[in-house]
Length: 478
Image (tube, rainbow, N blue to C red; front, top):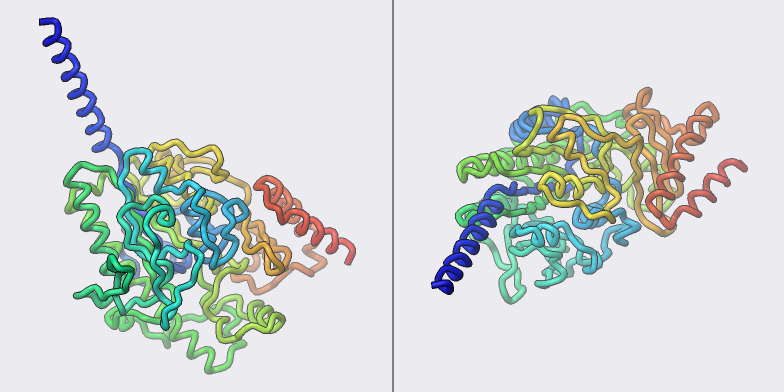
């Protein structure tokens, strides 16, 4: 009799424990990370852009929180993506420029989610395996299963692909095969994401899914219905374009038409995702993160860029569309968050946000402890409480070699040292047309920012610190 009672007692405990774990899974928020490539911060209707059509992103911002001062700490593809996966600065994870493989020993955000009971999935451009594709079109790059996929379990990623009108995937033999029925890559990405979400929802499984859309990165490819929405002759061109010749002006207008069309095409996919989440009944328990890896100068800062390219014997055909430089058009990015426990829908925070803050914020929102080694600042309180921490300035930079630059930005001023020597006053010069770096009248203010730059290099443990100090000392002697 006692044995039967003991067995019954054990069974009851097991049942209660199983039910408790099941309830925990159901109550955990799902996480959808959406990261288009090269979407600049101000090319959004909700950011005050009167030209671009982004009704779904505007709707996401109206129901969530938009951070108006978000920046990519390292505004090119690979360094940002490595930071997003690890929560680390470039000098910590080592991906200081494009084409460097992310060390598998760093724990990724996906691995942290898996440890906390989530199932994960990834689709799109990965660009962290260190090897550029070698096919004739410069696209592809099979990522081996296991460690190279950094904890993302259901995988439809590839090293690099910019073939938006040619939709393909890898088969089990590592061969590129067409995906039938699709003419636009983002459509397939969205469908795969919704299929993943549906399957996880059916078994009450918490999930984290990452969509890395290709547009609005090059090449200039888009569906005609989106291109037809924009007339290139009506665009207001950025300051400095008056110095361009007629051929360059025409090219810039065509680039802007394509860029706006690609952004609107991505926005259309955001609407499909929102609709799909609602139909599956998980919209009220899903954290949505919309962020990009960097911006795009789109013809801005042209004089400084052309001057730099001439000095370094670079191809001048790439001056209209570029990134990776300490210009706000390149480093400022959209950052919109929708979450179940949001305090105030439609709230806009002017808190400075760096890309190193993104992973801590996502983990914090999901109720997961942020690892102590991450130096970033969680912005979760701005979303759940309507108020939160503010950092006085943030650290930007790329490279570790002779091309290295480091910058400090606080929304009011930006100082860049080493390869790019720039100092801008955004109150009086919002379009960065007047570089004050060598202006004697700005020397005292520049000294303030030199001190801040050194402080950030020391705080983050950047090994480039001696070079920064040497550069500042050299300035004093001149």
